[in-house]
Length: 179
Figure 1 (cartoon, one colour):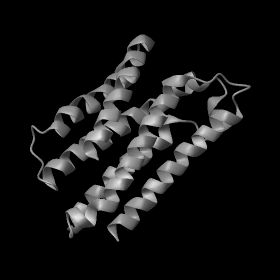
Figure 2 (cartoon, one colour):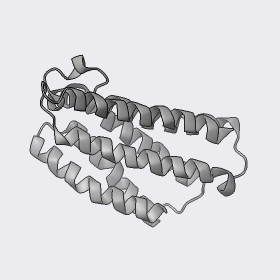
Figure 3 (cartoon, rainbow, N blue to C red):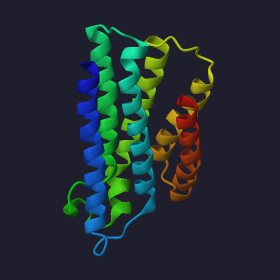
Figure 4 (cartoon, one colour):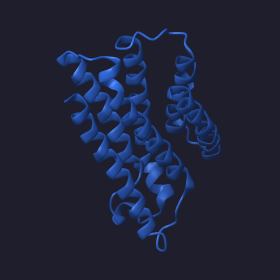
């Protein structure tokens, strides 16, 4: 049952992200497209798939969860949904000035939701799965949490660019380690 509820929320997040991409595609002739929110959307999409894969493995890893555990996992999943929902516009009107402007005004808040998801995921690994605090996963998780927050807080496009470019290979290593 838990996998079903989490999968429904994940499915909504994937749908929201894909609809955002369709919106960007549809208005590409009237509003400038920007690569940075698209890169973060790709990152979130990969993490959604990775998390979905993990949700399907939950019963084999831990057969029973308390209701509080369930609520915590739902909150974790909702942060990933919120990240997907905020990164890209859902309506053409939201992006009339271009994707970069949308991202700077509203979309970047998706990075905070993403970092919140990663923080909650860090807690899940420690609390539910009793992972060692100094494992390879935690060495990767710390910069993966800090970098989206830094990108959110940064007013410098150059800093945001470097953070985004650095994040992609870090995320790919994280996916490889978690398989």
